[in-house]
Amino acid sequence: MFTLLNIAQPDTQQEAYRLLTAKKSNVILGGCAWLRLGSQTIHTGVDLSKLGLNFIKEYDTYFEIGAMTSLRDIETSVALNRWFSGILAKSVQSIIGVQFRNVATVGASVFARYGFSDFLTALLALDTEIELYQGGRLTLAAFVDMPRNKDLLVKVIIHKTSRTAAYLALRNSQSDFPVLTVAVSRLDGAWKIAVGARPTRAKLAAQAAVLLAGAGRDVPPDCLRQAAELAAEELPFGANMRASAAYRRLLCQTLVQRGLTEVTACR
Image (cartoon, rainbow, N blue to C red; front, side):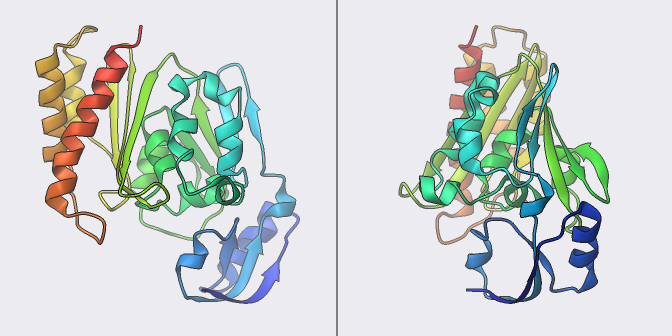
């Protein structure tokens, strides 16, 4: 359990960023769901509740999701889940329970780039950008590869496309962290294959996507299998208490092939 010495509720993003960067041990507070996993001492916790960042806004060509939006809001959003084959709801609905998903926030899931994040894996397979207070707007794929620094995630932007998608994950038990997560999507001939819980942060399998790009709309089963094998070869895997690296690599082949098959079946 963490120790919190002070708490602040700023009224502006500028003040929140000033407080965050005032001391090394100051942190942003979302629902505090993940902070409970550590035992750090926090000088000042910065609560963003007054910044109006709890929203899902739909525009003609994109969605905006505020950093303080809960994973439960993602799961139950009718507007959001009419798109992308509903993979955003699928990605969060197995995370522990409803009470937990009511406090876990989009901002924490995305900004912290937790390796176990189901939601981050699903977002990575879509056309997603993020907006940081200091760092501005950038693609999620670029952000995932950046080193950690102190900034304030304002919102997530998902572009509306006719992208079809599939999400799969394997857990040792229903409420546990995932052993592996996979999200696959296709827009015309362009594929995205995201693999998370390796156990590090989610990453795109770029070479496997290139292999599929030249296969046309009706991708032969052999090509799907080859792409799944290539995804498992090009990505690094590690071991933890839930699975070995070798097991994750084999599991990656299976889940990616299932995801690709599911997407190719969509018309």
